[in-house]
Length: 242
Length: 287
Image (cartoon, rainbow over all chains, first blue to last red; front, side):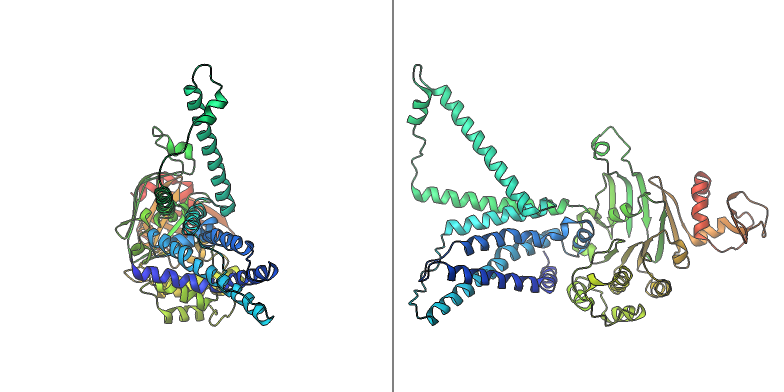
């Protein structure tokens, strides 16, 4: 890793993209502003701006790697004098820190302006009634971001949709397989004469672990997924040909 | 500086994946060494694999067999140190939505030897200086001129150009020849892949002809004129095997074996046609 190459990649990104980012910032701030104003006044927040912010974060990697999606821009991108690792790292930082900051700032500005409007109209608004942020929710967003990041390198067209579609398909397949395993296990364990349905429902599937351990396991799983998908992204970029 | 060792490559995945199949399709056991201080002219018919070969050299395509080395590094690794010393000007250019001046600000820092003064000079030569337009809104020829100026100003040790004169107007072609000639030195290797041989006739000093997945000819223009005579109507000599004849209103242009060591001017188009007509004879002559 060479700091100068990383700095040059950031420099090239901001020269090329600052206007688009500023535009997106403005659009999101406006959505949050109007979304908040049109929801119940007095500090109840609409979920629409949160949903749009999340979608913006998920489609952002597609913009970062858009040059990989057609032939000539791909040659341009792959020929930029920086290693594959440096390119993935810079885009990872842009997606996980920079764009998250842009989105959060746009939300703060949108909510702030909405509050300002209410205050000017004479409503008594409590500022602390902002949307609740849960650590597991934040980690989930970052996990999804890593999946969409990989998807934007792996797929060539409509990368966010393709990632979502394939992710959904994999989810469905795993659910079906898991159900089948439970079903088969249940069949084999049913005592003679017992009704299968009654027996399966009488089984206790819960594992006796504390909530704390369960939460930790969930965090570890998401952490592993994040590392896995960024590592996979690096390997995929390294194998990319023009 | 660039070394291709026993390269095998093909686009047909079935052929490539079959281990018993020694034929990869496009290139089979292709080897080539390119040294600094020369301008190589890479010639070949449509579909001969010129662009593919350039992509393998630059690490944009990975060979299915053999190894491509660039500046002592494995080209496929696309290491930053190698890419800093390499500029590949593709035929179908991509330019981002930036002005020329912002393009320089964004991409010049990647090239340690980049010279702003040279860039300005080359832009001036191409009458592109101070152009305020976004590069993606320029005409094909203008984009090419801006990128040629940038490519030359990077001062990379290796400069690879795929059809650089395609789309250039007539005055720009002569400017191209002039600026190319002025920016090549002993430490620089230039490879120009082209069909427009008449545009680059005076620039090229090594001719590399690619045919059917093999290097048919890789020789300096000096060696070529030592071994081949470019004659009209047997005006110089009737001796030597004739490899190619082309009837023109000005007489019959010929390429023949230079048995008497006579001087003649190399004609790349005639040479290429001769090489295509008498592949084995030409290849044997330069072995």
